[in-house]
Length: 113
Image 1: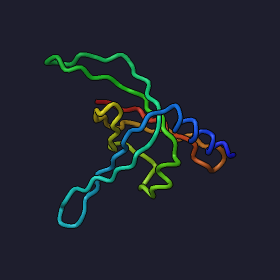
Image 2: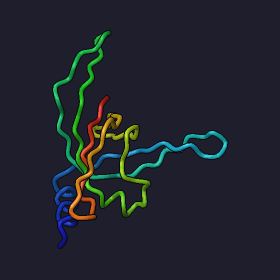
Image 3: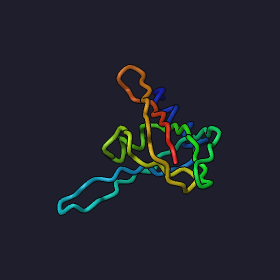
């Protein structure tokens, strides 16, 4: 089994499902959400309390590329996409894709929300 396959299997087994969403503009100015279910892990950072008692924290979300490729989703993820771990919408603020040669193994996203 390839390294990418091993990582994908580990994320399927130990990660949890989450939705990656990109909203696109269709003909007639209609917004269409494009969703793909990915399996990954999250790492939360300390949350900050904002004005008005709103609590916002950053999270690092790591997920594999296999689901994106097999769904023919317009990847890789990018700033402005949405991720839904734990049923909460979070906005992608940065993405670092990890490669082995030319193969994409995982995407590490910093998300906020």
